[in-house]
Length: 244
Image (cartoon, rainbow, N blue to C red; front, side):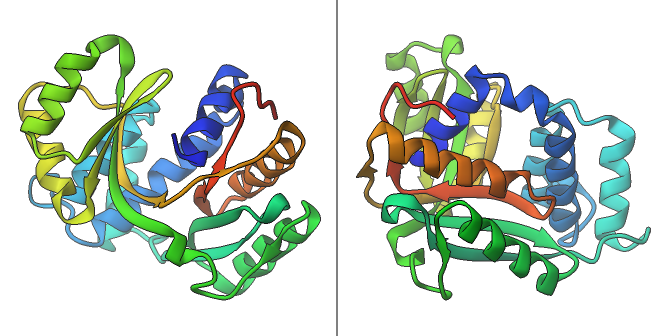
């Protein structure tokens, strides 16, 4: 299980995702805006189709979805967003990657650097930890919807690389190049996905004890709370009893 997945599961158990509903809406809308730059018709824009599905999964209202699409296509103002990654080290030397969507890079980089420093980490140069992660397609499906045998059969038939038991969900991983075809194939089989996106997946996990885990998750939480941050990834192998 990746550090991101375990951290997300702990947040879910503690009700943190409910507390962050407004933030989830903002993230979903920003992803739609960026995706819509490639065209406002989801039928011909697979990233937009996935972004809309993710937005619906967090109950983003239809009018906000439509408004985000208009911003992305340039019909309305407010679509001037740039995607980028920031890299650094957290407590215990854990590698962390931060995905952002911002309209002001100078502001964002200063805020991210401050958060790393405040929580016992340090921001690195581009490429300092990126080599420890691979860009992959990651699809999550409610674990209660399928047993392991059926999920493995479906995923492999659709061209996925792996299926991981991530406690509350099945996490399906694909090569970046195969992501769209796998997602569309699962969709064609009537599979309901909780999320489907490209993500930074650590090549190897680094085990941490409870004390370091708490510090790393506090840093990840602080980064995730930043308005410009879309996703936070880490190569930490958190203990099962980790809390934040």
